[in-house]
Length: 547
Image 1 (cartoon, rainbow, N blue to C red):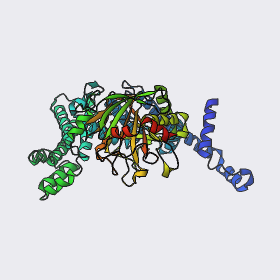
Image 2 (image 1 turned 60 degrees about the horizontal axis):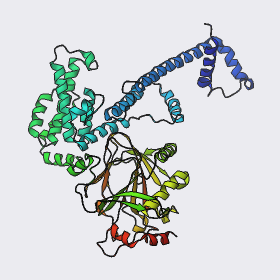
Image 3 (image 1 turned 60 degrees about the vertical axis):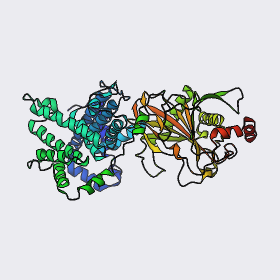
């Protein structure tokens, strides 16, 4: 066979890759090596090399096919319309199934991962798929969505691609496993109905169901029915669960674990104990939280009070500058400042965050957070002049010290930039640490909104009925302590609602007690509010503190 120049170059490269590790000694320095080469002859060696090259060429062919499949995913009709939950979910699903179900030789995985790393992109991993499923369930739970609407791609009128029957089962199964029983019931019942329709269709076409035969559909139907029965059992409806068990308990299906488990649960004498054990996984329904998350963007407070006013707040550093502030609550004190970070600054801040590398949020450095589904990075004032400038602006409209010193003498923390993905949320929490004294804890929080969010993503305070939807360029500020309090103000319990439609970026700046004793004193009485404190700390007095 005549080899062309490109083929020779390719073979030479493959030889270097395949035989490089063994060709580390010189044949000139060893007579024995030369003798073995002569005795074994050229034919056997050449044949072995040809076989190795053929194997590598086949691997390259397979890899090329896989990459073509990836290209098809990225260029499909739903090409990264990731603002819609179903698009995001399907993109993760297709990436994961293409990567992990493909026949890539394991020897090539490290090489491909290195290429991906060099390109500074992040591919979904296996754990991303159940996370994506859970995100859909969370959206359904918080925004009271119907499974049928989500299945059809309808999220409160925002339309996207439809899901398939397999998706319905996977979502229902994970909803059951994670304690979202009403949601599990809706998805599994819909899946049972879809399977029932397919089985009743005399003209069933396997090509319309992923190649499933009638027997496979019947088995799938029984599996799903048993899981639905378990869902009803743990929803304290044993009668319905028993009826479903009688239908789905087919001895021919030896691997139907849910049928076996449902039978044990129905027969158990300690069914109450079983229910209580499972109930520990079930999220308690908080209608107030759901209502606040679903509130319209311009409806920030439940009831208008006399203190709900807008005002101009002067800048102690630049006398002619004023900040537009809207007071939302006096106990705890919370307000929003408009247009305090500009588009160009936001773009630069995102650029810095991407360069530094966003990572999944962690709880006090101990592990990946399940209560907060977002990627974050910390940026310091010295990292970029922009960060220092934004921090100085926080000092201006808060009138607090935000100086970064040694950690035990901080007046503020570095800025935390966060990006939330599909269903991105932060469960109800308080910002101050539990095991810190007041001097080294978070006196106040400033939260910048770096993007508008089409639907969802509000910051809510369930105990006081405040809901703030993201507005690009706006900052939300609140005090985590009342002026007279030594303990954290429990009225500041707050949450980040799941992002339903859109992309949410925020930046947090936490201001500490240290260095702010005279800027935020206790007030004249135990009942003093932040507005009372402001009447004491006049602008002249504040300027003296600054000087």
